[in-house]
Length: 123
Image (cartoon, helix red, strand yellow):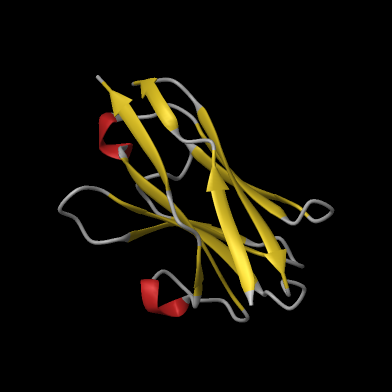
């Protein structure tokens, strides 16, 4: 079994930046893709961005394109989410997800999940 642990969340002002990390441990070598989702209070969990582990192909939700950047460090088995120009509507719990295929933009596309890290953006 694998473990995904998110970190780096916090409270920031609108317009500021924040970087989240997702550290993977266990039998992770066969992961094809990793992704970030977020869930605001009273909302469905929604897709933010994804990256393929070997090829490095990325996909972004329209709401974050141009502001957020996903990246990875193969040596550290860690995926990052750099969030710039944060808006109040970015406030949510951010979850790291992974799977042995490209899971697409739906929650059901990923079988492995972290515990989440809170990001709060104040106006």
